[in-house]
Structures are given as C-alpha cells and as structure tokens.
Length: 156
Image (tube, rainbow, N blue to C red; front, top):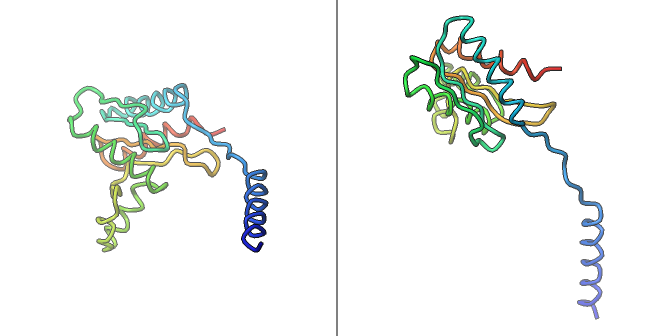
C-alpha cells in the first residue's frame, strides 16, 4: 500500500512540474545581423588600413562568418577563430585572460578553449550570449577596436 501511495505522490509531483515547465526565449544571430557586424568591422579595418581576418561564431562556437582580407597571413583566420571561440566559451573578452596571464596567473593556460589574446569579444543581447567575434592580423588593440566597431551595430 505504501509503494502505491509513493508512486501516486511522485506522479502528481512530476505532473505538476511538467505543467509548469516552460521553454526559455532565446535570441540568435541572424544572417542579416552577422553580415551587418562583419561589414562594420571590415569598414573599421579598411578605414585604418589594417588588413585582418574576421570570424563570427554562434553561441555554440560554430562558424557563421569568416573573412581574410587581402595580404593577411593564413594563420590569422585560425587565430581569429580561437579568439571568437574563447569569447563564446567563457562569455568574456580574451583580454581578461591576457591580463591574468600577464599578472602571473599561469593556470589560465590550462583552461580548455581559453585564448589569452585581445581581439575576441562575446556577442550578447541583453544578458544572453548569442555568439562571439574574433579579429586577428593587426596589433591586439587594433583587433579589438575592429571587433567593437562590428558589435556597435547591434546596440539600439
């Protein structure tokens, strides 16, 4: 009798939870938004005569856009990808890890997917992480300036 009563209580609890379960609203990067970000980033690079690689990833770290401007070393596309992926994985700019490393925190090098270089930024909408952008090929401060110019297109 006790087992039957426990099962009934458990079923009632599960049914109550299921009735109250809701799906979250999730923002995602659209192709139009990605193209807008990329165009603004490229315009900033061209304005300053900086040839770079620009990579934009979705919130799962998957490629949405990649561009290697003329004259940029081949490795810059991979570096830009790593910068963007680190921003997605950790939801913070690569500069955070770079600063920790410069400050002597060598453990940063053991974090999976962390890339301690400036030029990778998370892409957010409100408090939701929706992707990452990485730029490589110029000086790190210039790379992040280009990435920020791209992200400025998302601001209201």
